[in-house]
Length: 166
Image (tube, rainbow, N blue to C red; front, side, top):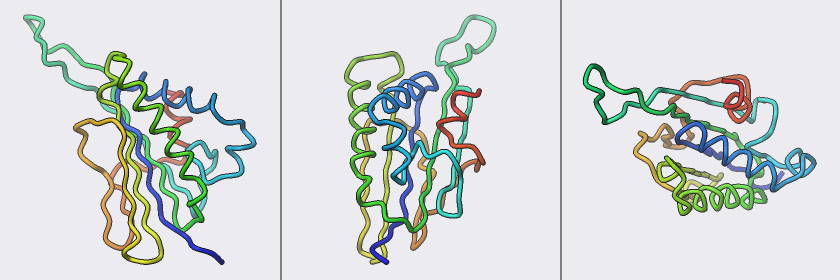
C-alpha cells in the first residue's frame, strides 16, 4: 500500500495578497500537473480531502475622528489531506512557500503578514514535519495529537475557488 500521511496546509493573509499567491501558483503548473497530485488546487472534496475557509474584516489602528476605520479583509484557506501518499507533493508546498516569501520581500502592502503553514504527520508517531513561510499573528487553527484537527469553518468548495467568489 505504501506510506501515507495526514497533511494540513494553511494560507493566511489579506485577501488580495492571498489571491495573488494563488494566481502566481496557478501560472507555475499546468492543469494536468495539478490533477495528478494531492494538491491545494484540487477541485473536489472527497473522503480524503477536506476544505476550510474563513474570512473576516480587519480593524485599523487609525481613528477618523468619529468612528474606527475598517481595515482590510483577511482570509484563511485550509486544505486537509487524510492518509494520502503526499511525499511526492512536497515541491507543491515549497513552491507556494517561495511565492509567499517573494511577496513578503517585495514590500507589497499587507504582504508582510502573509503566512503559509504546512504540517504532515505520518503513520509513525515520530514522523512529524512542520514548515512555515512568511509570518502573521493569526491564531493557529491546526492542532494535533494523533490526528490533525482543524478548528475553522468547513466548506464544500475548494478554498482557492471560494476566495475568488467573494
